[in-house]
Length: 283
Image (cartoon, rainbow, N blue to C red; front, side):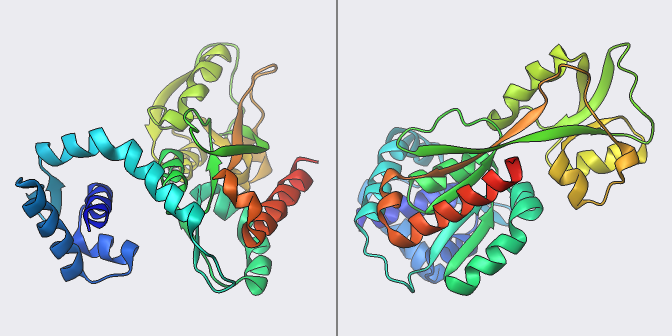
């Protein structure tokens, strides 16, 4: 009961509403509320409070999760490692939105015909790592640099080219202000040094590569985006420009999973399918 309450509190910190937590746990909202109430009674502290339409954690709850969060994730991961999986067990796969949309649709459509019990969701890379580490997702397909992979196996899949989207060829003869992805995201921080080394100054930073690409296409400023995003959006080749000569503007794409996953036939099969798929793209 204590573990259930702590798990529910950790999810509430992410989702902000009882309804979303209930959907993640496949239980009712009243069951979520009861878990939180039981945990509050056990600890003798108020853990959540209203915040408009959402709920927020109290300082006591935040301090509790800061202390036990890593241990809780590892325990949940260990429980997942011990879980018996059948051919009908539902398995969650966490993916980067742009990688899922740009590279995986047809492949997963074929694979789902053999294994229809896979469920896909999209997240930023730090959240993908958290979900895989905790056993909430069995595999993660990440975009960007992976800095904290404690307890996980990381398989590089692809170094995706990046292009500048602009109606006119960029002038690299002088420092150039560009639209980029949010460089505050830990997975994207590596890109800032590479941009500046290439004479490109981050100007506007977007939460989505799709938004950055659209601003570039509209002529607001050249936008640095992955080639897969530009192709997915149907951006004409004439508007896609190569980075300055010698610039290392690429985006790492990686597969992450708990080490035990290679010992499970269904997961090992999907891992192998993904590795072959990206090897063919890279080749």
